[in-house]
Length: 243
Image (cartoon, rainbow, N blue to C red; front, side, top):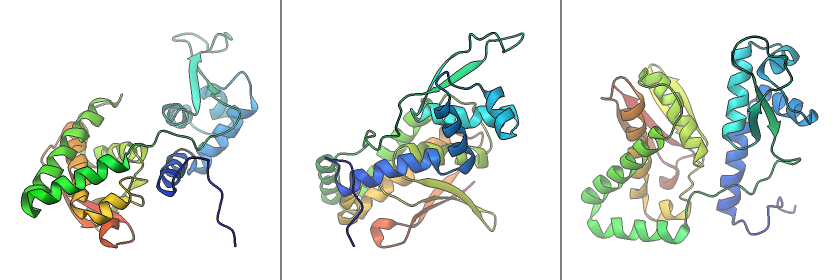
């Protein structure tokens, strides 16, 4: 059976990262329906129009539209049709292209990742783990600072925001509550073979979660712990969070 085609110029890891980014945007059936509705209307849609067409609360419709816009699938402008009523003008969301493209920015570089892995290995296991986590934490704080969202918030809410941010960076992350233990589960590693060859790179993931939560959560004492790792042969990466 022939393998599935992929976009020209994309390696298997790049292609997986691209599909992950698309899945993060369109994995929700309601979001797919909203995108198709916007695609059918050249003039775009407002949150009120989507809410009416899809039988949703306007806030829920706006949430999905903003997610699609944040992923680059919709452009946002001001509704000048005069149907928004009193108050602030409504936002109008229009499709950015006729087709959904898999050619999204890939947020890793194989040569640099291999270099990082080798450098960390040279440091020795204990120091390498600490350095990798510190690098990840710094980057996680930078990611959190770039989110246009409210903060601080509960650890649970912050974890959801962190999972969304990680998904946008190719991790295909989601949250789950395992008998009261909060976790981030990632089904894809954008570091690819570099992490398999140098599993210490997994500490970067844990550091990113730490940095995100330290910035987003009201309780900044949350402690991430790696429970499972794709690089070590597990089916998914699991980072638990205890506060």
